Length: 207
Image 1 (cartoon, rainbow, N blue to C red):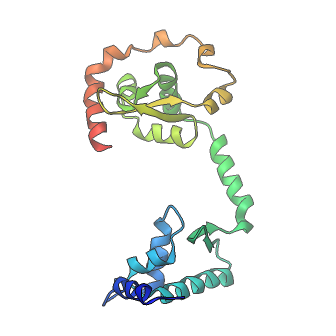
Image 2: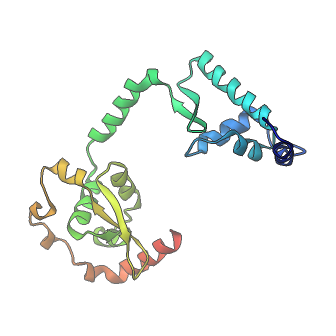
Image 3: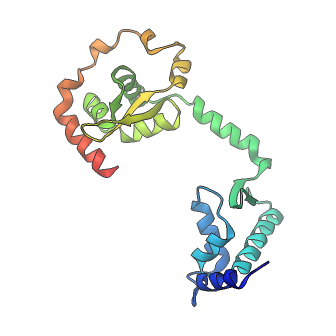
């Protein structure tokens, strides 16, 4: 039952002039939301009455179903969120598996080798060893589940990275001690510290 206090709060959250058309505004918000958004929060952000927001969400969900869109709008976990439609699950599984099975580029393999033998190590130190910026390659390795963050360098504040158990599984070994003797061919981190320290400082500042 709606109380006078609830009604007052609802009135306060309604803007005199809404910022945008209701349904497109809700779509924009839900597209960027990482968690289900409840209707009270949505109403406060878009500046429309709560009942109007609930009606618009219900209408959007029905429209997506009627149009057989590749996505749907569901009410889950106390809020609303977009999901891919279940009918397209086989297509999405194929896409994900193809990405996992795709071969790594030479740059990615070289970067992965540096992380494996010098871990835990920062991006800038990997860049110093390879002589090129590895930010994009590191993101790819993280997305592929081969590399993960493992803390922060206490001196520079830079994020540190290491290989994952999935990495060991993919190359068929049980531990890092089983890696072949490649480390002697890689420069010691002390040899690249001057270059890397400057990069770590920039990395920490942008984090």
